[in-house]
Image (tube, rainbow, N blue to C red; front, side, top):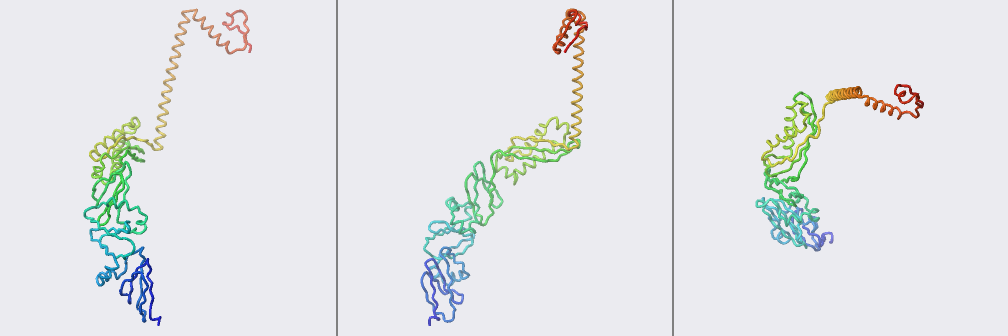
Length: 381
């Protein structure tokens, strides 16, 4: 006789439905049930109250044909095409329902609240809701819901450029903000408002006299007006990089190698003038431009080294000839003085003797000092 009856147990942490040949029969709250089933037509499907979403294909059938059952056992949570739903349990946000949702949730021990937000009125998530997004329970249970939210942290000294459907909406100040992604395209680009360095490296440019140079340039810049910069071009930093390239080519390509080597600041001045003309009113402020280095081809380096060596050798020869001429002139003047003044000649002789004596350990003199001066000196070392 017991074979004709089936026994089902629904615990306090469960909710269930009784199905007869796959069709809804009735909802089963916690309890013990006995069903007369001699032909095995009845089954029970259960849900844990920790995941109360009634995600069964019969959900729409229950709404239509069993409204009393739905009222007694389920929370109905529907959102329109321009609405987002927020589901709270015991005061904690646990799920975000996208537009066009139709959901049934089992009634359970938790206190449940449902809130609707109109997307047409606001794209930004209310700050009271933003603070809840870091809750561990929300991240763990509704990853799909959070994918409909763009969260953005704007650091200090930065601004965020908010774009809705490709159009710049406004600037975001430093802090944390969030925006609904449903029914719209949302993006935030964070820009640094401090001085930044931009390097243009390895630019191969021909001079006016057809010499290939590799020039490296560096510039420091900042945003003077972020909205104006993004209104002028989609990517201001890339635009500045291109203008630096164009200015550098204009400076190098119209001048000879000698001009560039003689005055490297000429390149800086030309590039600065080019940027001032091209970036006027575009919200970008260039503080400085400077050439880091100019790299010559290998064969040109050898030629210039030979030129420099020849120039320095010629300068050395000029200096040497000048010094020899001065020395000869000095000797001539000294000879004239000694010729006209015997005393001066005598002093010169004594000076010469003194220098000789400094280099000799011992001197034997015979016949007086005059003999020394006349060469009659015997030196012993």
